[in-house]
Amino acid sequence: MLRKSYMSADQQIGLLTIRGMTFPSEKTARAALDREGYYNIISGYKDPFVEADTQYDVFRAGTTFDHVYELFLIDRDLRALLFQATEQAEAFLRTTCIRCFSRAHPQEKNAYLELDHYANPRDAHSLLGRFLSILRHNEPGIASTRDTQPCISVPIQKYDGEVPLWNLARALTLGQLTTFYRVLSVQQRSDIAQEMTRIAKSSASCELTPEQLDSLYHHILTYRNLCAHHRRLYCAYPQYAQISLFDMIQQLQLVIRKSDYLEFLMKVWTLLRRIYTKLPPDAAAYVLEALGLGPDVKGGMTSYERWVDMARKA
Image (tube, rainbow, N blue to C red; front, top):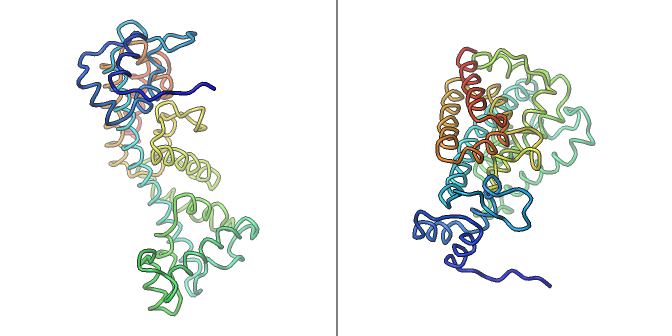
């Protein structure tokens, strides 16, 4: 049985040298490999730099460790930017769901536990089970100090078991929140979509439908999970995501405040400039195409600039 043997950073540098990579500073490379790991840097980001159709990874002439490490760092920065953007998108959906649902059921105690408020009780059943679990784990005498969530436990004691949706929602994951929206009644889904459209008009002149929101937040959830679990982002499509990163960036315009969205776009632009200026042309073309900007480097940069200009004028 074939086995992978442990290799020190110096041995890894030796292997990479045999395969055609050069090292402007072995000291810098050694420190990066010791801190970040060979698998994360090299195995994760070598593809734009290796020759095609070779049994073993052979790097294109001129490829340095700094090139691969720079792409690793760019992708990390992309994850940080996108994660922050998805947090804003999550807050928008969360707040609007709370407002519309609570407005529709102002006098009901824990109305979110009533199956009648959902389009299909069977689809809502597991979600309501999760709601009940959250509440029970915060009841007096059951919740441990470590597990207690004050946003849940305090109203349980103060209001005789009543926990407003705006409290419960703070304990929900993005996945649970999107499921909550998806299984609501047709009227509630429509009300929420209309409310989000009204608020988002300052950012984009698009009429949001419930179906569009389902699709949009499915993509947001996918990319959010990729960010949270440190997966490669620039080439997430088609292996992990149904749309390219550039498509995701464009769609976020619908659910992020315009000023924040434009700031986000400019920060992404700075990272694209790093791809354009710090990677070899062939590698830059590979990365930009994987991002969804097309195989032509200058054309891809122009496409992004054009989108930024359209977003400013929206």
